[in-house]
Length: 217
Image (cartoon, rainbow, N blue to C red; front, side, top):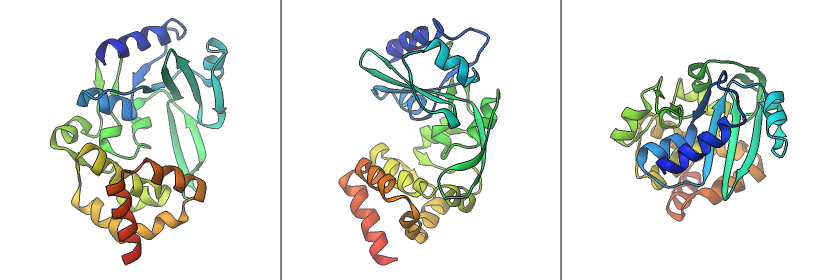
């Protein structure tokens, strides 16, 4: 994967000026550090959205509000997102206030788990403000910030915690696991289409666990 990541960094850098930051992030940086293979690449940058759609004219820019463009490079899918801050999740899913920024540490604060908030640049420099690498080694899923507040922002995080527990073989931090189990009913607040998509990502084991918790709630 190391060589593929380098190739994609070079491809992006042919179009994105060196004055802008560019990081492998999210599930991609997590799986890269775990030595796993993946075909969907997540990147973060402080390049302006309008600049991105100019230098990547064939991109799909369905998420203008969030500063996200989607690209294809051979058989690989690339999601390129502008660094941002978010607040006021009035519908338990989408932020009503978004501000584009230059600081990856601030961007990291909006992410769900520490293991998904690791930023790696093209030279291998790692920005890890919440100890995600330590949690990868310890095989633990830990929420960034106050657990009730982060779940209230987006109950999908409950499903993601159980999904990663199974797919990664990690342990959910005790206080996070208890909160997710006690508040499993919150997933019923999720848009039915989004809920269906998230449940389809779960393994059979995780799906049955979620259904069992729902039945007992």
